[in-house]
Image (cartoon, rainbow, N blue to C red; front, side, top):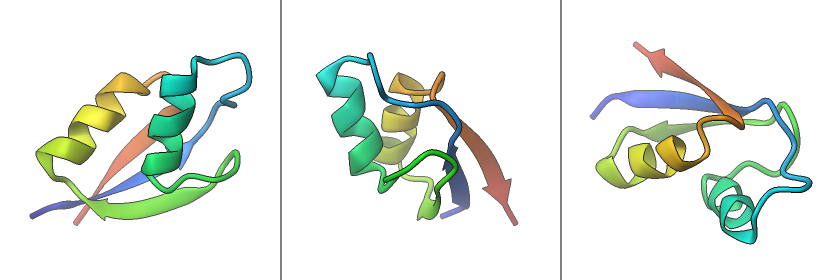
Length: 60
């Protein structure tokens, strides 16, 4: 599968508990932290739910 790089660009302060847990489940701990993960349907679904908080880049 393809890999994607997910970077947190906005804070989770004043967000719902569900969004906070989704960001944490993606492996993001702090603002501007990044993770590289496989682009599975589960990961893409989580990214869709918090797309206003993260930036996604396609890796070769």
